[in-house]
Image 1 (tube, rainbow, N blue to C red):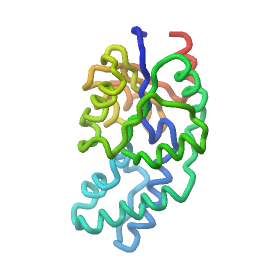
Image 2: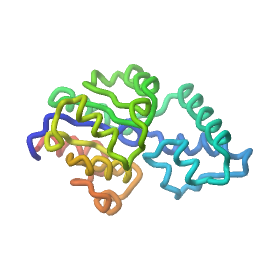
Image 3: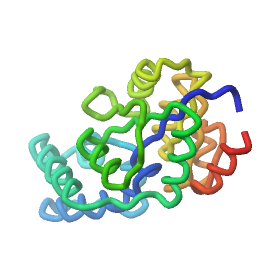
Image 4: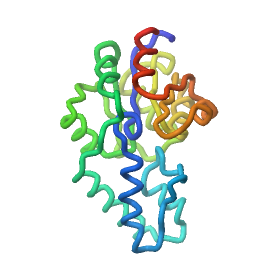
Amino acid sequence: MKKIKAIVFDYDGVIVESELFRRNILNQLLKPHGKQIKEDDKRLIGRKTHQFLQEAFPEMTDKETISIREAWQEQRMKQSIPLVVGVKETIDYAQKTFKTGITTGSTKKEVQQTIENQQLGEFNIIVTGEDFSSSKPDPECYHLALSRLETQPEETLIIEDSLAGIKAGKTTGCTVYGLGTYHDQEEILTAGADEYFSDHTALLQFLKKH
């Protein structure tokens, strides 16, 4: 590994096991509209909810999609989303060794709540959906993270699980490792990831050796 000074974690799918939870809640909210998100529809992964709804169901009005997004966010805050297995150990090691950050389209309130409830320690920076306007694969969120961390792309490692997030990270010039939470090795590497890891155990072992 190059001389890495900072690690930036994606949130959904890297820290919390959220996508199945989100799909189930959205399907409950979409049912009165006669819509459903299929199990094999991976467009939701790594995308903002409103953006996905507009793309998947263009016949729905903005008022309808905004209402569903707001209802989803309300449900999300009421329920505890489980952590991805092994992430606490990865974060603990990273915080002792590097600058650390989180970059996500989720809300600051939700991320802070997870950090506090799950005792995930102190991150140097947290970039959330309130801080940027363009969703991944646009690299805006990661450019902002680099600016706040005051590190160069070649000094920064991004941990992602979504194909859009991997593309966003690579566009900035950072090293990107892909976690196989929702995608297989071929999909992760085809998206441009520098390395693929099936889970946090494999990722942590690699980080400690390099």
